[in-house]
Figure 1 (tube, rainbow, N blue to C red):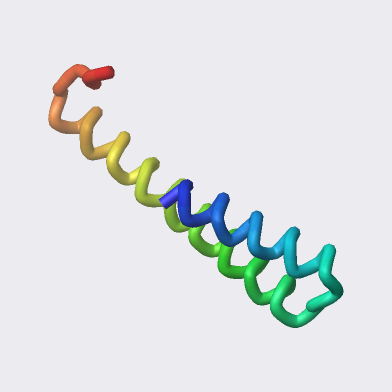
Figure 2 (cartoon, helix red, strand yellow):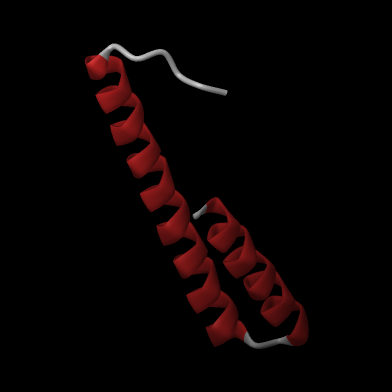
Length: 58
């Protein structure tokens, strides 16, 4: 998911450099949304992992 966020961010920066303000704004909002969804899912996964008592694998 973080890869998607980075992709949308790159698209937004490219669109902003080329002068496409509407596309840049939309891509930036999509990047923020995907980033925050990834953070929330990570937090939920971390809490569930702690509740189960398993040690994290790296």
